[in-house]
Image (cartoon, rainbow, N blue to C red; front, top):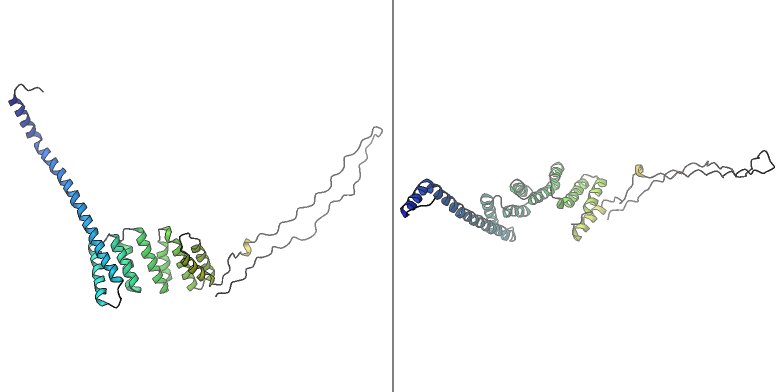
Length: 275
């Protein structure tokens, strides 16, 4: 639209602002609010992470000191409580709880591990807590609950450790053959360190169960010898003068096999004596 005078332009601007001014102000307010709100949230998250890191460092430092120091134990408990209350979903809190479980025994340790299983947002830390708790349960001979925890592991990295613990349970229950199988599965892992692999191998050797045992059902029977093929009969010769042909005789005969088939020989393995 073309305006003839300046007054008409001013009136048009006033009219537009009257109709759209509120929307513009609301939009600007929301825009600045989101901008400053996002920056505030980022700062809050950073601050919370720093506080969680500081509290975790306190737990870590206290755990390195003497366990007989009651003051340090109280400090560790207070720092851990602060982490759990103020930073429930933080990885620092889960790690601090795992560290706390390592310093304690049985029931108190299981409480810290249960907290990680229930509250941690990282599956790897949940699995680590399940594995540690299963070890405590095996020490208590609570095998059923330990098996349930091992069945809940999701990360394949812990598979060899789970198989090793399964072997420990079966050994305690007297099932040496099954325990040896579990140890063998654990030894197949490529993630084991040399010292850990050697330790599992020692436990497996102590069972006195030979490797590569083959059951009688899996023994392959001896092959049946093929029958002899009879000798070919020569072709009859026809002469010009002969009106009839005479069959040629041969001295070859078909030999029959009368020897019985050899019975399959079972494979036996000499058990290795435990050291």
